[in-house]
Image (cartoon, rainbow, N blue to C red; front, side):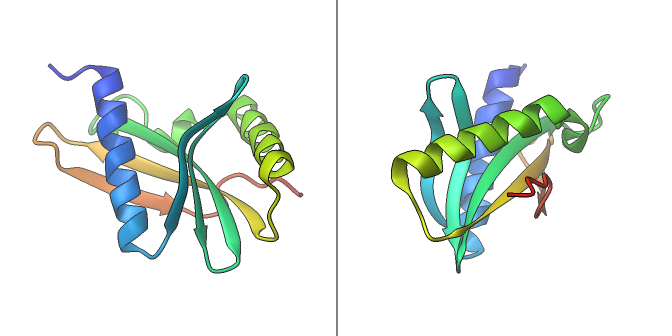
Amino acid sequence: MTTASEIGRKGEEAAVDWLRRNGFMILERNWRNGRYEIDIIAARYDTIHFIEVKTRRAGGWTTPEQAISTTKCRAMFRAAEAFMALYGTNLEPQFDLIAIDMFDSDNCDIRYIENAMQSHW
């Protein structure tokens, strides 16, 4: 039986692989600063992408998309503000979601949802 943390790790690996194959440059993984955390920070073209990865077992009670709450969105915005204050960037920020359904055979279905969270920066 695969634990939730193992499923989460496999989901993040799949997300990074997908992003690289689609032209993203990975800047940070599991970036933390105090209580702030961002799963993946990536760049493509003139945009910096703050990406939340949600992985669930396929056929579960809820979809990965349903796991994004307003509380999580606010935390992402604060984390992105902290990152940008520390490192600065001329890139336009965007908040995305990678939703992954993980199957028992380690195959997965990946959905990249751009602008999943609107910051009104």
